[in-house]
Length: 212
Length: 249
Image (cartoon, rainbow over all chains, first blue to last red; front, side, top):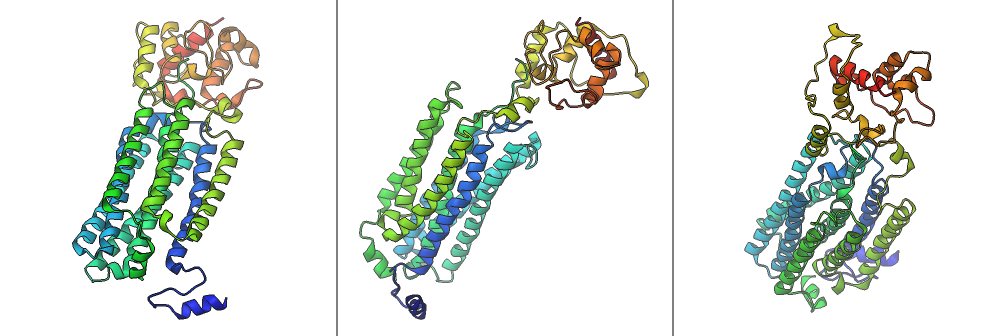
């Protein structure tokens, strides 16, 4: 405890003095991401446990659109690349590069959310709502929470973009961009799992056949 | 902070390396898509293993290079892996207990699940056309009240209704009707005879009741899951259907 108190006393200093040698904010971010693994782990498990247990349609095979979602997955992967480029430019104090890549990341995130909005709307028109069946409940809860994570990331990115005009983004405060990047990449890896399990593996789950 | 930050990570990936990693991630995603492209691979156990392995590879690459966990203090790795490991453990336990990877319906669902009528409408109507020379258009949903109590119906047209978009054949077996092999509801092969013995009602009244209010009489060992479909057909279709079922002696 004494060490913690001492380290907080040095807040704002160039070097972090604490027992871990890790910046507090970075440590906090990794602890948060660690717990977020549990959050998404629970939601993904729930989806997998209830796979094939829906009593009424639409069933996944009736509405899941794998080609479209593959495109949105590509977009999200691209945005992760843009994010590392934003951090790389931050470390080099290239302000123009920072703005381009931050905005690029945010825009690709918005495109991803756009795909999700279209997907959710199509599902709703096909008759799949949160309350329709177990598929709808578990699918919308999981992908909805993921979409919420992406949306928070988008807001965060635009805030950083705005701050770059106030002279607050640069190599001296590179950790700000780095933390945002950690969060953004985490959201990306969660999608990697969701895309594989809900679309590539679970997307062909069908209900009982109509004829024979 | 930043000067020491640079010094701490001498092996920090270069831009060129980031591009290579990005391309690698794209290629893996492309391969995943190609794996499930042939219908013979879709939803199979053969596709499962490579898909999971490839996504784990992507997962690892992003964490190690994009999130540069490789170049960080080992404590961060321990913290992240403990959460990730705990989450994985819960997932593996749950998915293992409920065989979630197979995705097959458990008993509750396999007995009660009903087909989705919006699926494969095209191929479905083809089947109907092959069975019946003159199929009844399914868009005759109008229902007028002044022509109730139709007794006489067209048996052939009734067969079309039975195998049509209402989905009767999804749940009921009719042995002389190809494709009618459902087991959710009772076998209707001899319903024209059986219907007179089920309750105090006459055969015709019993069949009508079973369609109008299915919950009124539930055959032993079956679940009360039949939907009320009377309003999904016209009076004429209803009469034809009753006539058809009655003819199944």
